Length: 500
Image 1: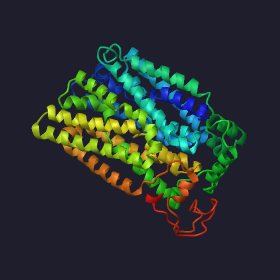
Image 2: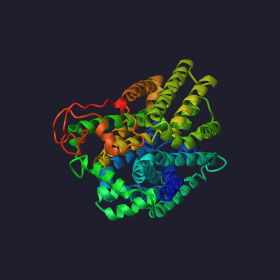
Image 3: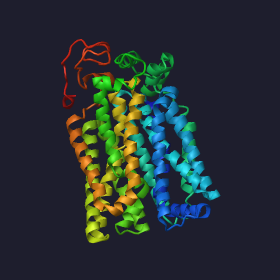
Image 4: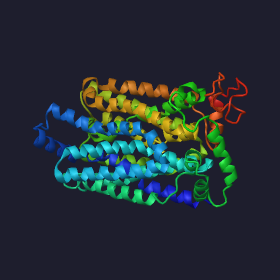
């Protein structure tokens, strides 16, 4: 494969862009020492007692600050992608925030200020949201036949980093009141490496050609990522088709409603983005250890299980980039959704048994452990890759920034509600907390089974044209089949989604 630039950049991102995932899991991996640190800080500064209801509310708010950061980043994302480009947002902005977040956590430790940890945790949420732009950036750099594996490979790299980090969080190493700062310190080094290393990679050729109109720079970028033997005339012809498939350089908010194809694209993407929103991955990033301890495991047992679960499913990180190109998007995304739904179902059963029996036990904890393992399998197969891959393949470049914003913003509100409600509702209503999530996830699986198209290896303009043909002659009915991005020449050439 004559694409050393692409392979090298993917490997580099896979190694270092995972600092955001580590920062996102600091509160989960180090829950015991951090809970002690936060309790001590709040008691000294605000006279809040560690065993009070006020402390539980404050701790829940601190955990939820992560998702506040994610929402803020989602609101700013489209503007950043248009103003600073894919590389500017994915590398310069995201990595700089990673450095600031890690420094805030380190200063919190040495100054004894929980407020600084809240700032770092909030920024970790923003970094988590912005990692979608990294996937889109890498996908735009890759040829059509490599979009899937390149995006999935960097996600797999981040998951493997979590696997390597989890044993370090045992109480004998980082998981104690003295040494917990070492994990943010590692994140700081990774963020700095990513910022200064990825700065040497070019902007995506598609962004340079379509977004910036810099054709000469796009040519150099294409040679770097696609190889010296790439057919640039054919590549730029594809870019031109994608640019002309919509009638404006940038797509406005109203056009997501008036264009039939944009509505279809957004509906499918929102279905995919609702899978991680409804899953337990966000809840587990804040409460996995307390959740397992609730079902009868001790702190060390919970950590050991977390490591075992991650190690058991780790091989999926290695095969996922192959599966997405050999199987295609549709079968893999349906499998991921099914595994996430199974996790919710098993946790519903585990919590129901806990409610009926009045406590945990071997069977209850086993159900929870099996469920969490199914959920981790869905993560390692690409749970968080689905949305950016679909955004990159269902939307033309001029619509991609706003589509990314919508696809992240709406699910994040759902996530915030779930995380905020969990501590109080799991005590008061028990299994009824998980039941609606499992039900809605099952419904999403059925809808995706019916609507999700296969997009593997196809040019974006071809995918967009074939989603569904227009029913009207509006100028915003982009990309009618058989035209060159102008008004539809005929109506009624509907191509069902299942046959894409």
